[in-house]
Image (cartoon, rainbow, N blue to C red; front, side, top):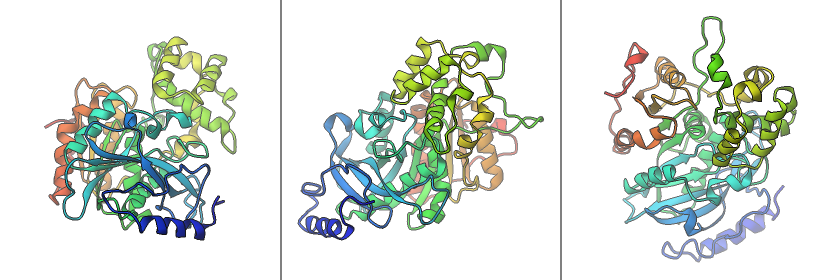
Length: 414
């Protein structure tokens, strides 16, 4: 339900916008963070905007804004009448004058930060890794539109690893930005994401033609993409299956604890006590409000392993939440770049290579690079020399040849 009658809010916004110039904008715009969900009648409309706190900006950003915009509830199973809700995010503008038609856009989908509102990227400084990566994109001359995702930093639970919700939040952030004419951005977009955000980016590319056909999505860049991999001959998916892996303290358990925490509060509820040990339940409680880097430390301190955290098969128990992370299609209409760490344990290398191969088989133009020795995090910036060229070709209208081949093991650096 809107807090302010739509007609009054729209009239006020129009009156405010009419007084603005590009040099002064966004001073005077609705600079009050919505206290609850507001609706405009359609998704992809700017609800509020304000200068981003300098501590949360990027070194190479000329200007940075915190934004709140309307988006479609992606958890409503594709219902065209799904509720509108408020989602937050950030816009970073590069230095210099925009080219004719406006700055080309990087739609940034962030990796796991946690599920509590205090973990939202718009409320925090970027990690050193992400700051380096995003600054590099700014130096290339691209604006960055970065969603927080549904329910992260705004009312409602965070739809963690929910493909449709992440896609709608990403697409509506770009829509809202392009619909705000005072922003010098153009309708030429490359979606970029890491980890949770890589899955979001790939899903966004899949949903875009139907959900936001007016957006000119040129391609997608995904690093550390979570994927279940190909089933083995017995139909099962192996994950941390050896006895040694089961007993080892594993920080990636933090991701499953986030899934458990969300499912434990969802409707219908999946009671965590059915699958988590007492040790695991205590850590899950911490996961409700603890951001990811601190959550890794909780896992290490408690020495959580797969054997002492779970008392039954979590993959089977959480099959329904995991299913929400499935991609709408593997046949993406525009080219996809996969950056894969050769030593990635968080999103296992083989599973990512399976996704690249399956996408090739589906008919997607894929450029996949495997980086030997690189882990889940290191791959982000290690892949940039390749991904920047991929993006440059897309924005210049050049064809992406791809490197889909008959045998997966040759999908690597060339």
